[in-house]
Length: 588
Image (cartoon, rainbow, N blue to C red; front, side, top):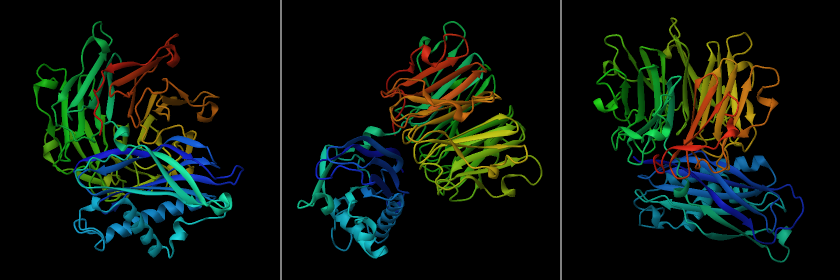
């Protein structure tokens, strides 16, 4: 299985003629649905505009990320709906996905549907797929008009219905260039009922999401960062305060050979002591791979080979990996399994508790996490762990472990800490414990805002005692944005993401009066275009007065910037800079 995570949408969408001016309270919404073989992913939607009329044009409308298996039959379904009611959009998205599922359920990929084509799947032309999907929608929902028909005289139902099919092994690249569609809108068009819209579909290949990475400060004077390279090896570079060990004083280097990681792998790193690093990733066989560095002579990166800590097939393609050291002698690692459950294993320095001394185990049941879910773990004390992910309904799920009797992984069920639809599909999840009695969790919402919730040990401040809330407004983050949070002190939080213009966005919270989430606006810490679409973001506080942030640039290099409390070293006092050259990071 070879999985890509891709953003899909329109480079531009324009109303060419006919729609009259004036406020008709209608909206145009792009709905994209993806299927791999007979598995239909949840539809995603993005607002193109309110009251779009002749000559109006929208650019850069992307949704995602979507997980696409290049070894499966893939359908990419576009629907643009013109409607007056947001509920109509949600209902239509659900109905189109259901209709696609009905079509696929009765489809033999090798034979074709109803004798339409004896060729493989690609032999069914898009217009025929459209007819089949619309026909299925009519079967399921009585009449096609109930799904994609006119909602009122001013709002013209389905403006665009396009579907693209790909055979196994075929590169998933959508056609580019102008396409025109006609829509029937007699109320607005009078004697000419054919309104024309044009659009340019964004090629999926041009917005592939880079592999994940992680950074760590094992001492206040040293930084290490890791990523998956184009050859699927694990790359790294470092900075040290000692003269001659800055970012530019050496070249990046591999810590795991070519082919060690699958293309869609994430990377996690832990410094369990100032003299030891452990790195984890998903291997090409779905097992979790690892390697380590120790300051002891003979235990450097090149002194041993990477090794598996789980059997093959433990993780689903594209799974995130999260790791934590709750003590200097203990490691816990987590991932999303092929069945959507959360898997885990551990290492302890005590005899008989190494990686190979036990089997991985589930801490959340099958179906707990949606495909491509973000994953985060926090040790708020040496005796307690909390894990977070995105559920299949878009809510944020969680479970915990505590050393106290009766509070192990298997002693309770996972539970939601945010309601359904809180997070966009495949949202990253970031979590932090700014003290031993407080947790903060963050995610990207369906509207591109940054959502959050918290837990505190004080009575009345549990997960269920309040509602999640936004810390950045709708549209703050681009689809598929990376997300990172740092607590540089117990009274201060900084959050980072990729904005729609490619800048790295940020906001902060401080316990001091007047510095809460709502007391200021988010702000960019880089110029537009610094990060490529869907870039990961890594952040680390190596001291209480210093922050370093990292991302993937448009050229595949690793970019960075920093903040320091010293005068003249704020975000705006210098320009971002590369720490690894063009092409260092893999695209998947």
